[in-house]
Amino acid sequence: MNDTRRNRQRYESDIRSMIDKAFKRLLREHPKIQVYTISIWTDLEARKSAIAIDTKAHSDARSKSQIASRVRDAKRYPELYSPPSTEELKIQRICNPADFKFPRMATRCHYWHKGSFTWNLLRSALRRAQAYAIQQAASLRVHEDAMISINSSQDWYDHERRLSSHDK
Image (tube, rainbow, N blue to C red):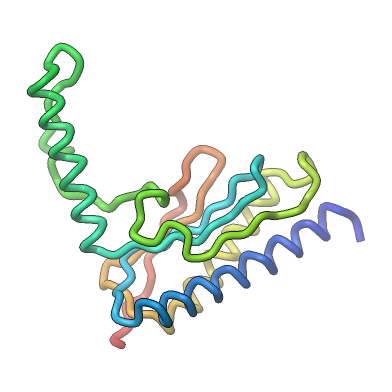
């Protein structure tokens, strides 16, 4: 078996294990939490991955805070900042996993050789991990508008998909 295939298989096994660990930890430590957003991300160069989970209340509070900051900056420094547009004043889902309520429910360092794992391999592996997480999310309490994303080479929050709603 070549290194590329071995790395891919190990990575996919690691990510599935992380998903299971994150969901079990959430159920154990925060059983009443209703999941609003899940993000599965991997930093290819740093060889690190994390599962981040957010709630609607936390996402809304962060969004309101960001809007207030933009309005305040525009008033204080009108020469540097323009006022937020009507669209920007709407509360939006937080899309930076680092800002989620639980940014590191599970983390892992990967041990492939730098340069031996590419975005082409990672993209398909992350999509399979996303599908696996959607199946495993059946054990969680999820918000009716819950979403799950994976990262891409362009963005930390990308390829968003809907999670099914479960009454638990």
